[in-house]
Structures are given as C-alpha cells and as structure tokens.
View 1: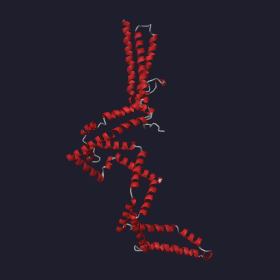
View 2: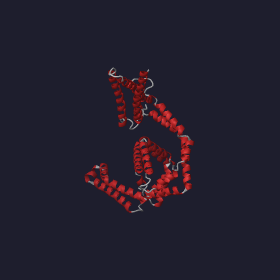
View 3: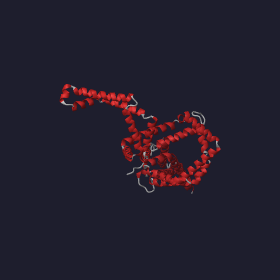
View 4: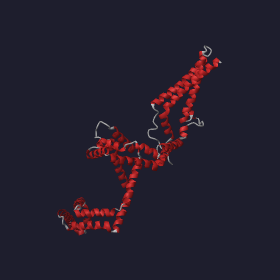
Length: 423
C-alpha cells in the first residue's frame, strides 16, 4: 500500500509572523465581545453606548464570519464536519490537476517556449560563466547560482532510486557486452608488448609467499602419508625439507631466469587463453556464465552502491565549489571555450538555436509527462503536511481578512445604528 509522501520541512511549526497575526485577529474578536457585553450594561447611561454596542455587535458578527471562512479553507471549524469546509484537504487532488493543467496551458506550449527562448542568449551566458576567472569579484552570481541549483538538484533526488538506476544501467550494459573477445585482445596485445611480464613476476612472488606461509601444511602432509619406519627414523622430516627446498629453488629460479621453461609454459598458456577468449565458443560461454554470476552477486551491488555514493559526493563537492572545479588545465580550457562563445557569432547562433529547439522539443515531447508528474506528485503528498505548508505560506494575509472583517463589520453596524436612530 502506497503511503502519502511527507514533504520535507513542511511539518515545521507555524512562522512567528503568522502566530502573531493570528493572536491579533483573535484578540480583536475577543475585545469586541468584551466591549459588546460592557456596552450592554451601560445602555441606559448615555445614548452613545448604543453606538458602541452596535459597533461591537456587528464587529463580532463580521469577525466570526471571516474566522469561519478562513478556517474552512484548511480544516473543519471547531472540528465539526460542516459541508464545504476543509476545502484544501478535500480538493488536494483537484488542485494538483488544475495546477498541472495551468502549467501545460501557459508554460509548456511549444510556441510559448520558443518565443521565450528567443529572448535568451544561452551562448553569451554560458560564455561569460566559463570565461570568468576563478575567484573574480565581478559577475560571480551566475556561477554560484548555477552551483547551488546543481547541488540542490543532486540533493533532492532520491539517492536509492537514482543509485539503482545507475546500477541498473551499468548492469544492463555489461550484460549485453561480450567481454571475452575484449579480454582476449587485451591479453594478446599485452603479451606482444611484453606487458605480461610484471604479471608473471607477481605470480612468482605470490607463490613464494604462499609456500613460506604454508610450510607447516607441507610438513604435516608428508608426516601423515609416511610410514611408521620413516617417522621413527625421522626420514619424513628430511623428505619434507627436501620438498620445500626444491619448491623454493624452483620458484627462485623462475624469478631469476626470464627464460625459465616454466615461465615459457606459462606464457604459452596465456597466449592459448587469449586465443580461446577470442575464438573458442566454450571458453566464451564460461566467461559469460561467470560474468552473469558476478553481476547477480549482491556483494557487487553493494560495491557499486559505494562507488555511486562516492561519485555523488564528489559531484556535490565540485558543484559547491565552482572555483576549484574551474581551476587548473580544465579551467583554462573552459575559459578559452567561454571566450570563443562570446566572440564567435556563428557558434553562438548555433548554440542558441540548439538550446531553443531542445527546449521546444522537450515541451512538445514531455509536456504531458511533466503535467502528470506535477499532478501525481501532489496527489501523493500528505494532506496534513500540505495543509500546514499552505497555511504557513498564506495564513498571515488571511489573518488580515479576519481583522478587516471585524473592523468593516463594526463600521457597517455603526452606520446601520445611526440610520435606525435617524428614522
């Protein structure tokens, strides 16, 4: 079951300005109620109190009516399920649909996008951004604004979902890639250039370390397989020493002699492997099976997730510090490109035309998808959270409606009382 999406930060407490205005509006309503009660007690003292009572009474009516209207936008007044109240929560989905339709009608029409893009010089803006020296005091707002925008976009994206998309894309590419011929060609080229020699040297050194670390296993194996007479005479220990010494000498000779017969055999084996990887179907099938098992291994998924997190962290560090990003040789190349963009009208027109066509094409191809995204996103938002956020955004102005309603209502009551007295 899908749960409504809670908007980050939307559930925070109401702003201080909203709380203050709400108290002012409520305090004014309470003051009118107190004034009304007091004026009733003074009704026979002086005719002026009648005007005060009429003003306070009408002010209470106006204030209560506007309180009801303002409250009904976001919730049921006093918690009572009165019809046509809690308008925003009840109509959240319809608001999302109308907002998406508004965007589609007024902003995502290809003609509108093309007209707006004609007034934007993308090439000049990009050229100034690239050509500006790192750390210059002038015109840095665009660079840091773009950096903040890029950082906000990276941080707002769902890390798990985006990381999964990256992993899925890499996995699909690797599954479709026939790696056997590539490995075979790389190995064949390495053998032809002699770049396989360090690999053989490394294998020899590794074998020496393995033998040194496992001499006790060789001695134990010889001891277990020897007869009782060999054990009683100590010949098993002598035999183990001979075996270990012979292996050590063989490894030492292989390390010292590049033309050692076993090294030659190893080179022949590598060459045969390189050939089989490129031409033997059975070898290629084994590599494909191993590749599939490796890609299905959860450990590889965790490793890729770590790689993605480091990549994402590196991108965030770069976009947060554009001066560092544009320093060194990369900065010099980008600055030269920026200068060219500003001084080459033909190139600038080409880039602007491309940007305009890309924007128009995006509006035409993805306008409906963007509308659905807006609508579906709002549908998935948590009702209480969005209600709180909207109220925090516009609630301060709505409290002015309550105040104005109280004062206007009182003024109308005062006029009616005066007219009544004149008649």
